[in-house]
Amino acid sequence: MITIKINIKPHLAEYCYGKFSGCSRAPVRFPHRLEIYHTIWDLMQKRPANCPVDSGNLEIHLPYSSKKDENDRRKDPFVYNYLSERSERIIERKIEISMFAELHELLDENKHGFGIDYKETVFHFMTKYAIDSITEDALIKNFYRWRDTIRKRKIRRKYRKNVREEV
Image 1: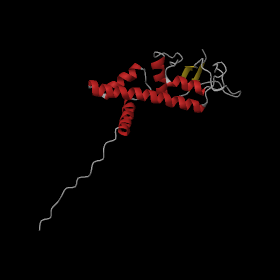
Image 2: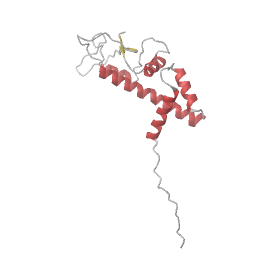
Image 3: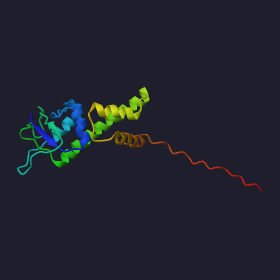
Image 4: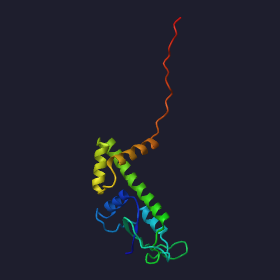
């Protein structure tokens, strides 16, 4: 298999290694049923002649698919083994969305289903995927921000105290 290194946020790289490589530093292989697999496959390009050697904190297996692209040819990872900086940002965003969606769902389920505090749930999530480069508070604050945008509270009318003037 052909691998490539990309540079993403450290906590996202740790999440990928924890979720898809069993907390080892082996190259990450995304399952073909996930959207990130198909996104990487779509973004693969031929390597430019003046391209530097790959460097980054996440090493991934390039997908090999028997599907043909729009020009009726297969993308062979030996030829199409380059991801541009723009592609790296797209992949980083997809991984970030995936990680936070999993965390937010877990936080909601544990709090409202089992009564487990947010801090305990985040601690369990971080130890499960061996995430060390971000704090628990940052993940909890992200959840609060997400919750406030998703679950907007209705604006209540302002109550004013009626003061009667005595004559």
